Amino acid sequence: MALKHLPVILFILISMTLLTANTLKASNGGPAWMSKSVSKMENELISRYGEAQKERISRGLKQVSEFWTDEDGTAEAFESFISENFAGDTTTLNAMFSRFERLFEKLDGHMLEIGREFRWQTDLDLGTIYPFDEVFAGYDPSAHLNDDLFKNKLAFIVLLNFPLTTLQERIDNGEKWTRRQWAEVRLAQRFSKRIPASVNLEAARAGAEAESYIASYNIWMHHLLDEKGNRIFPKGLRLLSHWNLRDEIKSDYGEGKEGFEKQKMIQKVMERIVTQTIPNNVIDNPFLDWNPYTNEVKPALVSDGGDESKKNLKAVNQAEPDTRYETLLKTFKASRLTDPYSPTAPTL
Image (tube, rainbow, N blue to C red; front, top):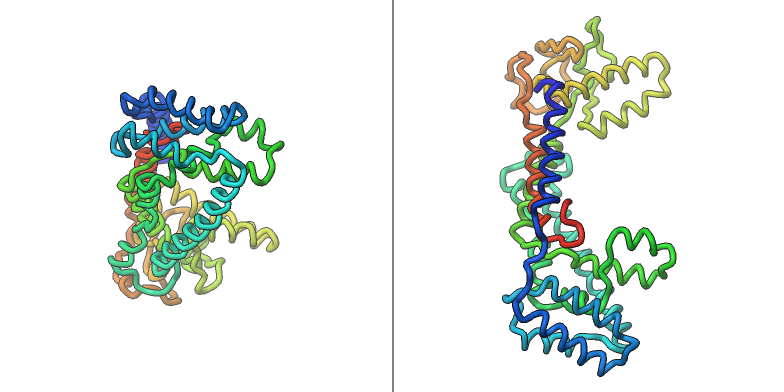
């Protein structure tokens, strides 16, 4: 893909984002009986806990009503839930906050641990990555968690008792909040979206595919040739795109003129990657030599290891397909699926 195509891609992505912002609606409208039940329960709770709790009561009812659907229960079920789960005194509210804080920390920590273990083979350089390894890496064990917490009403308990805030509110008021206020805001923010498990899984799958693509996108630096055919990087140096290349540029600042030559070559390599003019066969392949300036490819005259399966790849400069931008587009589309389920921020 030529560099001239990049502005077109950016225009398309920006246009799609604006379209999402203007056309997708986050609210499902709620059940027909909701307004009447909210009014009834507001009066009942104010009568029970006093006018001092009016603001919390009104806010909590509004937050719950925005996410409650017919599948969550009838008007009677809604009213019963509100009556039983509004924490109208400090003792109950403190106990609720403390319990959620401790248990969600355990829950999130173990989910993170499981996800890390499932990605172990693909994230680390441990040898062959089999198709089943990629399936494990693409599975998000917490994908159904948000669904489950809404279905068992724990999410609604949080929304009933703790404040949902907008970004602007956090910017305007955050400096005056206590640690406890910030913690309550973060707890409620967890349920500012009601994203279906199928959408979460699609986003996780797209992300895992992107990570897998990048995980094997290595450049064997000793096989880069300058315009005079010289090798300016040490033998065995294999750098991952793009952060290893970036770090190498940073480290070369201390090497004077030689470091500058290395930096210029890395810059050219990165340009080839961005414009998708990098020869496909040189990616993660130490059996070919490549001049990134002329884009010439030829069989390697030196050996420093590598995957033997790539030994027979032809020395041609046929460009990598637009895989990088197809992968970016997949992650964009998967992320965009979450927009309709995020009332406070309908464009990811």
